[in-house]
Length: 438
Ligand code: 5AD
Ligand code: SF4
Image: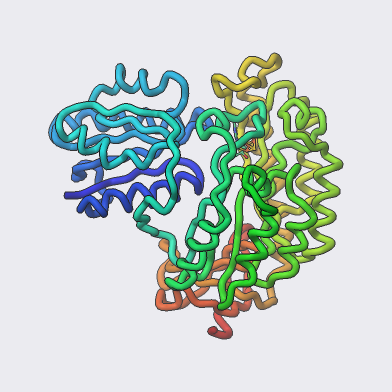
């Protein structure tokens, strides 16, 4: 019996899919990459932008014929899209061959749902339930990295964003549970731990006792053995001095901070409900570079938010040049039903959004190229992650700051720390050779 999972969207979903795979493997299924051969096909969905949704509906549509040929196949739709208002009903009406609809807060029902569907009954439930990570047998696929959830949901309600509606209110995982999971993963040989949350910096606000994200970082940072600790995502309004200090105190906490700015215009930030100004953000960046001079700062930026003028957009370009991000995820604003920005006036025409995103990407590429050039001729410690499928006999890995490096070597180095001499750079990608092994 075989399962197939298609994961859309962010790291949170990638990690949820590891839990889904764990449940299915526990039920006796084995992984397969071909949906038409699967006994259970899972679509772990995303709805952050319309493009994601369109793609998923397209893939679901294509499944109709496969399911007609193989009626015993169980089709599961779960994740953020199914949690949205009205989507479970839409799937029931327009995609009647879907057997199971689950949301983001009840993955623990998956086995029961599949068993119900196999008795030729539909199962649809998008309730938020209380469950513990420890309830899931996880099937991890990202060695040497392991994802670890620390908090779920979001309370920020940025006016463009659907996440608070589909992932619910912020809930922190108990401190002791996170530490126990990290210790177990380190004992199993994982070399990199990435703490996950929509807003990791607000970790602990809802827990008893004096715990904070900084105290969690320090507790993990002092663990023995060589490993790297990463985390994402940080909201600029909550990134404390204490967190920056913790990163600088512990060599195994990476100086790599994903700090979405969204816009470089204070007026647009206000309308986005981001709760910081352009100057607040730039002051935070100065503070980070003062304590962590080699930090790799990455970001998310959006163009075409309602009311964005050419002047606002130029403020964004100016901020990108000042901050010197090592990379940036650039998005075109997408109207999401149910969010305040959906009904704001002055929606920006697509032609303008397109023109701005092109300019933004080329501006960031220029910045990345400049940073890459400064790295050529230097040595960096890199954690070898595995073969790079795009090039023969090539491995890839990351520097502490998060930059991707390619180097010739055989895949046996996976999970080892190596020193790489950077020989050349092609914009975003660095190429080097191993000069020292761990
Ligand atoms: N349109 C475009 N991009 C969005 N993001 C969130 N909501 C939207 C939207 N409605 C982007 C933000 C966020 C990232 C995960 O996705 O930049 O940081
Ligand atoms: Fe969305 Fe804002 Fe929450 Fe991030 S902080 S998930 S952008 S509402």
